[in-house]
Image: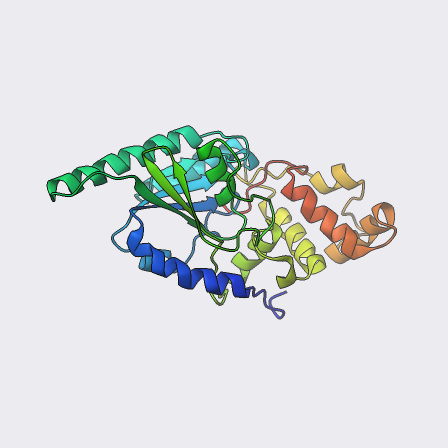
Length: 287
């Protein structure tokens, strides 16, 4: 898989990144949104450089998609690293009120400093920033309590920057997902592909599915990963035994049973089942 590099930097992301940098001087507070299944892979390598001097809240979205052991381990790890994570499920609304209250408190502190400098209070401008498809737009819709921006579990839906008013306290800036121009860490890029946090044009679904199966095998003995023993056999009725040792052979056997022998369709089904939590609440990264 590493021979065929996963790279995805479409024109709308490049354009949005330029616009984003123009807006940064207008922003008071930043929500950095990550995917709970892959909190490291969805950490942008240039983010801290861009946001120097900006107040930040680390938002870990899709808490519902990992198990309690992964949540507790990651929460402890992040706090030991000096970060306060705000866990939420933007789709269901879990944790969103607490995040809003934290943003308002941060805004009150910022406005107090404005008053001390002889400036008037105003709504705090909050930027939601993160990789594609980590739930930024869904989070804004939950904060506003109505659908004000397009939201879909598909990378590349948001293509331009848009301000949204949240009462008298907060103004939210919804921005397209941002990626580095080049994905240097291909293991992280593979996890982005598995979780659908990158455009489908960037990868071969069959090769990503095979890598996903290998990753499940490596994680099976970890309590925090939440990989149930024989989860693929339970879901698809095909076991990995002495006759089916390699992942490509398993995929072909599953394709013959479920998709008329179409391995690409079977690969997509496998990845979609993971993305819908039909294989269990699995964390692909361990703290």
